[in-house]
Image (cartoon, rainbow, N blue to C red):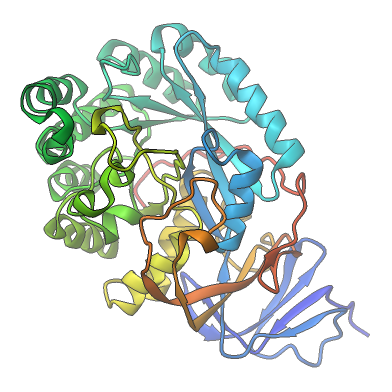
Length: 455
């Protein structure tokens, strides 16, 4: 008699990068043991009929900030409600702080309290002090590091000298640089010119013009050139505009290891939201235009952009207080998968297969987690999401689980929602509630196999 499965999902449609097919998934222990058209005759300790549903690999959100209204534990819970099973958090070292100590602190916190598997990126606010710490941090399994080319006045900025120094360190040790790509000095000047001289309390009216796409494109191009000189893989976070796609498209056509993400808010919202939601819609880089949205969808479909993330930054704000004093960022983790499905797949912009690639497989490949994560195949972790394409949900802040207290999708009705999920074969989302316990998640060292060419 064959060894029984611990879990068998039967009757569903399995979605991977290879396509959509009728397949049952058998799990033994924490990994996928079998994928076949019909496994109903195979003994199993638990059998779940998921007919009429998709079986997806668990989504991976590679851009999460667990330091505001949602900490590491809360982010893992919020993510689980939305069908995300793996999180990559930013561990920021602010001015005066040790990067090594901040990474150690978040690593310990995650191992003790995360409900989901997680990895970490280092984030540098004071490059002269923190770049020398990169080799020690990499020994902890953190091999991707974010640098700000914006926010000069806030003193978060990494200048070209320290960026190139860091890139050389990363290239020599198999790491990858990540950038927030906006020209910080130019934007600071434009903010002074428009926000301070003309805007005053109405600074929201000048937000977009003080953060023009041309200065995003310039920073993207500069980062790509620096990475070329250092022979360093480069990841460009939260691309927002058609202009910024031009140097990315060129670099990828030349075969350079340049990877770029956009975020769900840039695919679904525009800067007009500032007039109705005020500073709740103040994010950096800013929301753009409908033309930019469509250009981003096209770039996802064609492969210029490789990943959709949330950039989850749940911050408390005064929506119509002094715009200049309100922080950047918004929540988005819980709605990442369903809104991307509704706008992208239901909207006819990308296929469901492509959605799985940009939410699961590509993140796993870029950050060195594939094929353990990012797919449903024999030997992979049994990170599985059962997705109901017929479930209609109207997004309401009071029904979301972030501590931010608001959502930029308030009142939006989406068709398609995750109804069940598993991490390494263990229940995570079950009967509408997250049942994974704090501490159930495992730390994932990143980039054990650095990417060498575009996906």
